[in-house]
Length: 253
Length: 285
View (cartoon, each protein chain N blue to C red):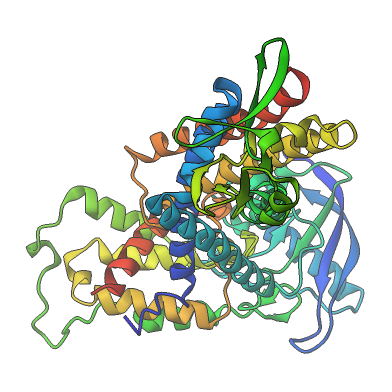
């Protein structure tokens, strides 16, 4: 039994030809959108319409479409990943909207995430932060130790796992009034800091990752807590506090 | 140490913001305790307290720490805000920040700037008068001697000095032939010997009461003071618990208690501060 119905909506979407050009908000009417479709399927429908009209389709990031890859983004009606919590944009459904709604769709806004085209932003700043220290150096030349051979406190293992759930989508940066990446970096630092394997490089890791974060031009943390609420994976502010502790500890060593 | 940049990095700036902020919270509590004497004590005790606060060496150290904290908190806050604004050159056409964060947390810089303006005017009105005003009155009391009213200065050693017999300066004493004159704003000197024979209390109580009871500006001063305390309350509402998070102190067991205490502190302290000028303006005889 399906309760799906079709709705007509107005979309206001950021269009920008390339990284260098100046973009603007454009208005599109889209009819007969099934409330059973996902937000990205709705955008596919719009793009089909645009192609039929011989117009340039809207560029947007997407990959797995099941909420685990971190590719989809979009600031929808003033909120990262749209008007729901604990989801990515691909998990947002059109049943969250009503007939006649006007929906604003914008790219992540951050100096460190420049727009490449339309709704697509360059999130390689996150990659560079990861490369600065978000790893453990493990010898993989045939003498790998079984992970279960090292006993780990259940509480720490759980906390580490929760932090590792971060998919690096950038919603924290997008929603933060300061464009701060603290939740992302906090999660990455915590994920390793909590485990014995990560302790070896803990000091350098936090110093290097924070330095890279600052260099990329992300803002500072005001502890508004917006990131925690918008994070599709429910990464907690505790991780930012842990990063603050780790950094302080590393700084006075 | 050098690599971590304990001054420059984003996290370090937040440590300093938190440390100076929490120190200023302590200052607020102390300042409030002093101010409450305007309601619960008399002029003499208030002025004695004011003298202690401006002369005790330990208090002096604390006061310099307070000036430093205010300046550092303001400059650091300005730098942080500047970077934060720069981090998002193009804003959103539609944004719904109230869906995920509190008013206070989003407006700390604006609230802080307003508080800084208040601190400056507040210091001009009271601190500067207490420290530098040459016409600062000394405390006196009125007594009846044989049906006649007489003004007496109160001295710090518990004595009294008839106002009519004290000249404002040595020059005036030479002219009028007064036995005593005032030197260094608070010291009573013997005119012949030119030696200090006592010391008066700067009458901060009188200045304060006059300020808020002023026929023309007293009501405006009271209203503005109360508004400033509202601003302070909103700043503290986020700032107090936020400082602990910045220092890395977040724990499922203790954080709710810190947040609860922070909220109570943010409401009670500014409320008690605000009651004082209201009491002086409307109720003090």
